[in-house]
Image 1 (cartoon, helix red, strand yellow):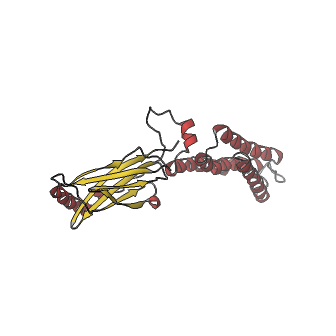
Image 2 (spheres, rainbow, N blue to C red):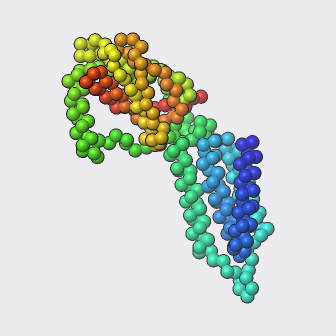
Image 3 (cartoon, rainbow, N blue to C red):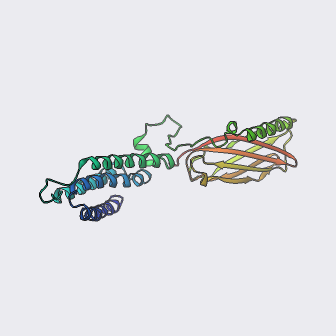
Length: 267
């Protein structure tokens, strides 16, 4: 199915597009076939990367696209106009082919930046990681809380930081176990005051922010499981780097921590 469905859709689309374009430009059979071959690979690249079926399937699908376009260009070559050799010029065709290659490469880069390699593709294409670690290909995106570029926010942040220093709260936070996708992991926060007494009855929220895609941002509230300890099991659906902002509020006191967490791929 991983080969039959994409190959069938690609071949049918190639044939239909070829004859439509050939009907419009009858003198450009082989250039049309060349351009369609490149565009077909460009269209398949994002799907192949995100739904990696194996290098053999990907290679076979690409070869089918190229061979189909080659046969179409071979069977239906360019028609020559009467009294002239041909009315087709390779200059514009070269520009179109160049832009088609750019589309192919850009589609691969954009797909890798937003979705990363699938687990199978990462295992086959990326170098083997050191023991106990995992390699991911997800682009973390730009800095989402760059206060230095926004003076007002930077000043507010400094004021809040001074208040936090005066509170003297000590916060220990993090995952109890190594977080991986689609597996519940416990996120725990413990808060004590300057005298090491538990800070009870606080409202604790965690903001998980995905710099590469703001639509994936979400907020969770942590209930208090024991005095000064707040925790909740979380199931992360997307691997890679996440920005984490922890808000702790009790009465008029506010405490905020920024950090990052890296979510691994489930095996």
